[in-house]
Structures are given as C-alpha cells and as structure tokens.
Length: 130
Image (cartoon, rainbow, N blue to C red; front, side):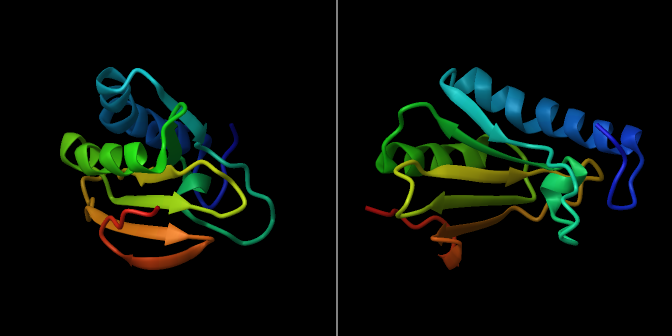
C-alpha cells in the first residue's frame, strides 16, 4: 500500500478500514459466501482517480450466485449497510455478476444505486438482468 491520488498511505489505509468495518464485515456476517473480487487498486498511470484508487470501494459477489441471487443480494444489501454507491454489474463476456460498493468515512454517502451492463449504465436503481 502506498500513497496515491493526493492521499497519504495512512489515509488510504483508513479508507479501507472504514469500508471493511462499515460495509464488508456486516455483509460477510449476513452472507458467509461473500467474496471480495477487488478493492484497492494501485495507480496505473491512467489518470483514473476513482474510489478503488483511494480505498473507498470494493467489487463483491456471492460465490456461485446466479443473476437472480445477485439481484436479491443487492436489494437486501442496500438496506443492511451505509454506502455512497452501489452498482449491480453484469457483462456478456463473463457469466458472473458483481456489486461495486463504495463508502466514505466522512459520512457523505449518497446512497446512489445503479445497474450496468457491458460497462454502460443502463439505469438508476436496481434492474434485474436475465
């Protein structure tokens, strides 16, 4: 872990701890099959300053879950934990769906929910994909 995107290493670590304590741990308690696919991402020089790069976001899924089960998980999950953004993500080239979820330690969490397919937003809120 190193500092990046204008944040010190300790600030990114604090962001990751907040994400784990407030979002990932409670979801893991409720859903033991929860997997973290991605969280902190090292700056790749692309100029991307998204939440993964500052330690405030994770991509998660339920191991072996169907699209319908991931949709249900997202519906229930949004009422279980505080979050800034929650995105239900699906692609045609990958058979698994996942949730992108972010959390801000400063308490400024918008509760924004959206659905994406093949890297394009298809709507606000959760949309069940077949």
